[in-house]
Length: 105
Image 1 (cartoon, rainbow, N blue to C red):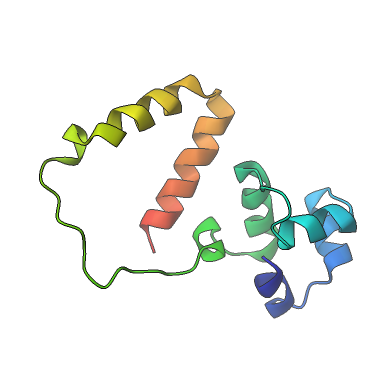
Image 2 (image 1 turned 90 degrees about the vertical axis):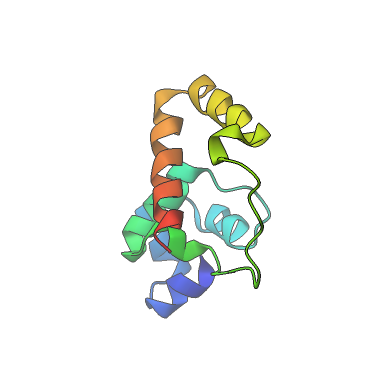
């Protein structure tokens, strides 16, 4: 986040103000001293005029893993779906936006 903020020429104080945070809180987020909630990440992306996916490095594996079956048959799929629907509506919306953004990269 710091790299994108600096690339856009936005001071920490201005970015924090626009995100509704203190400069100290933003520093903790930038230093990865705390986990940033998806909703805050969306706000940061809006302030910077970027997508949420831009906060994540583009790490494409050299060799794609082999998939033995349909993704719907994968054991983690059911866990993911159950966790998704157990979350509040606002969290589901943020999570969907995050995954959509990451999938476009």
